[in-house]
Image (cartoon, rainbow, N blue to C red; front, side):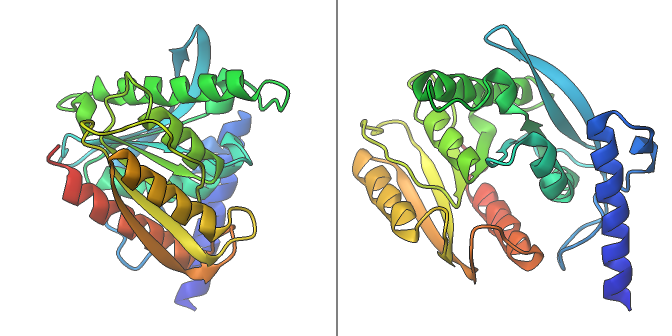
Amino acid sequence: MRQAARFRLAGIALIGLAAALAGGSASAQVVTGVPGCADDVAVRASRELVTFESRGRPIRAYLYTPRGEVNGAGVVMLHGGTGFEMNSILFDAHAIQLAARGYWVMLPAYFDAAAPDRRRPVVTARAWRRAALDAAAQLAAKPGVAADRVALWGYSRGAGVALGATTEPDATIHSTILVAGGGSADESLSGRDLSFLLLHARRDEAVPVRATRQLADDLREAGAGVEVQELDFDGHQYDLPTWCAVMGRTRAFLETHRGR
């Protein structure tokens, strides 16, 4: 009975957030940070829709602000291929939970920088990477947050954006979490003091596990520190318990590397 009530409340939150994204009047009904994981804490954070500029283009983003003790660190969460609207709904309560623990969090609509375009993959990827780094700069400007204390977190396509942004020559990112991500790291990263956490399911129909493991090998060979952890799930679209595990491991990794 308690579980059913929890999912009804979560449904109210998702409906309200969806309306907020669409500009509807239901935004006032949003239930922010409805508990879904066993280790959720009391909500002491707020969410607002903001806009920042990247390469002369306005980028929408959700900014999550701690209302309790601030730990001086930030996290940029990069959505997957289904886009900002859908993934904002998916990640909202998890972002609120990070903020409630003292992190400044931003979830940018990096597709605003350039719409997905298979005919111009290099140009598009460059715009997305810059949007991610500009979002990190926005968090670095918050009270007590330094550029080297902002981490990038990406899921699926967002993991590729996070990887590319972290390895940009001018990036000041030191800690990055890649969830269900692949790709490659061809350039030397030695001397950059980079740490990565790579999370993958036992099986993933969209991003093969071998691609994640190959990326980990590439990153290590390039000079980065890498942790790889398997999730107790089969598939690419995670269920709630798996997302709870992802966020728990994310926080543990951020706590380990927060002194950088």
